[in-house]
Length: 76
Image 1 (cartoon, rainbow, N blue to C red):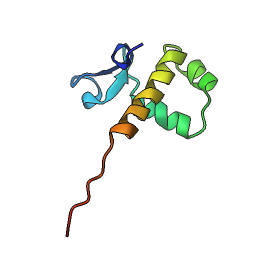
Image 2 (image 1 turned 135 degrees about the vertical axis):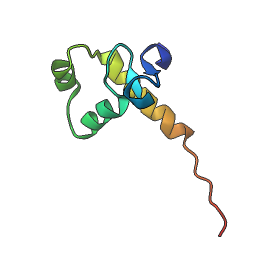
Image 3 (image 1 turned 45 degrees about the horizontal axis):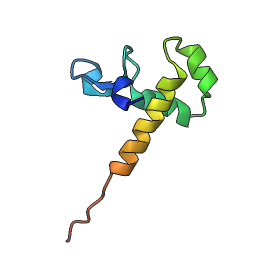
Image 4 (image 1 turned 60 degrees about the horizontal axis):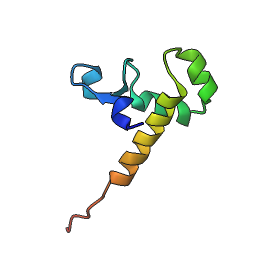
């Protein structure tokens, strides 16, 4: 499933942060919870509107951003 079916960016919602479609859950929030050690099952229990596919989409989005990031040195 394409990321655009799960992750949306709307300037009217959470100041344009990427969110899970149909929720007000920011991708960064879900990633922070996972990084803090919350399990997939804990997330699904605490956020009933969330699905496993939503969590995987957040991880895929983070992977996409990591691949797209490029640092360009600026000569002094």
